[in-house]
Amino acid sequence: MKLLLLLTTAIALPSYAAGSGDLNINDGVGISFWLVTAAMLAATVFFFVERDQVSSKWKTSLTVAGLICGIAFWHYLYMRGVWVETGETPTVFRYIDWLLTVPLQMVEFYLILAACTSVAGSLFKKLLIGSLVMLGFGFMGEAGMMNVTVAFVVGCAAWIYMIYELYAGEGKSAVMTASPAVNSAYKAMMLIIVFGWAIYPAGYAAGYLIGDGSNVYAQNLNLVYNLADFVNKILFGLVIWHVAVKESSNA
Image (cartoon, rainbow, N blue to C red; front, side, top):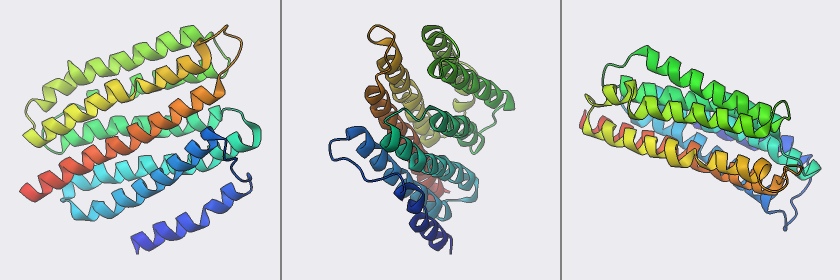
């Protein structure tokens, strides 16, 4: 029934995007929007189906992974429409997506640790605050509400703060008592946060900091952002799925 509901919804949703016109074969950015849209849908279905194959303590983690990809799928339907119709960056849609999905990714760090060891709730609060600061200043810079360089610096500082908390702060203390499988998954997720998330400031720089500062390089910006979402949302969830399956089989 769950799979039927997901598939029915997926079949109905393209009507929202159909009104935005066909893709131009030379529009690499538009094609990238559709590729990521399809990938997010596939990942959403996968995580919700696999949720029933793991032990109870991992079900919430896979549910959140499915929600992250599902929310991104919904927003990508509209972001693609904005790009195809106007050729402009769908800044508002993208940041609404990130405002929902990035904190959920921080929740995943807390959940994967809480499933196997004791972890303080303050870790989640610190990660949530860091993610909101990062997103808030990023949006203000892209929306023209403040200097793009200042926004870039503050956003990167918040990102580095989250890395510190996970690598050397409370996250490190909690993971030391976790199982080898959880330790391995935590390290993989850390690599995604460090190197995968680095794609976002690279996209910001490509879109707003390169050149004379007066033009926004929309194609560079959106191609990089789409790649980053593909890597960071789907791969992030697959790491969690892998450890959930491994830990469930050992239970």
